[in-house]
Length: 82
Image (tube, rainbow, N blue to C red; front, side, top):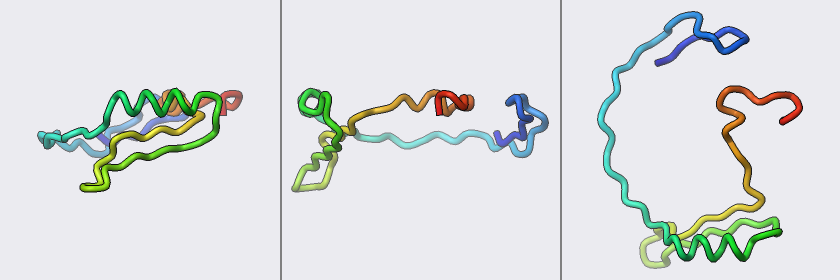
């Protein structure tokens, strides 16, 4: 649904309603142990690491530190938190 909201986040009107369609399957290539190992290496560090399989380019691990919680952006972030 696409809706118009007021400054309090309340729905004012429905703009468009598109029925859902079934998605496609995905295959994850992340290696949990490698991911956790890299996270442990980056504790207290400011860095990003991306590990790919050199044969097919699949992503085996992806870590960025410091991380952040994106949830405050869902309903609107306060001036203090921004």
